[in-house]
Image (cartoon, rainbow, N blue to C red; front, side):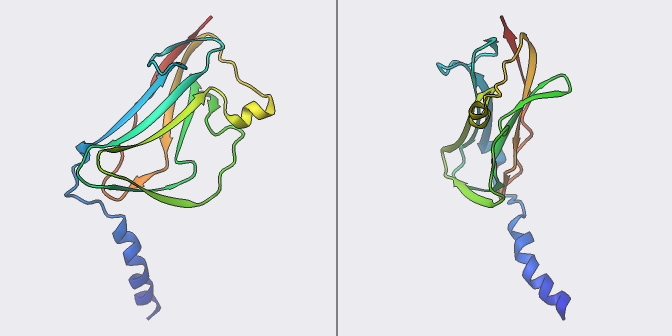
Length: 162
């Protein structure tokens, strides 16, 4: 009897995560760019220059897109070779909760980070200054969508000069 009750209670949870095969995932675009303080996309920065990392999900479909996520929804990591140099979550605290949201048709979800430091790191006076070199930055998203699976986002390469 218990296993039947368990199945009846759990099935709606699994059923809500099933991908909608009628949804056209090509109608959802993902954008991941670096830009300077003026909003101009670029990938070469001066040593002490801050830059903006922007990740955007654009819903061009005729339907709403429902997402579920833990916090932080989006995070970024800067690498030099195999070493992590900075993360958008450094010195930051997040509640361990699940949230959900909707990206309405023809609207976007946008997340930005002004790197390479976080507000938490700035408050601690433990600032990171990227030395002249080549770096990579990756985006991580904890979101999952009812309608489809978000494709892996490419790693961006950028350079810091004197």
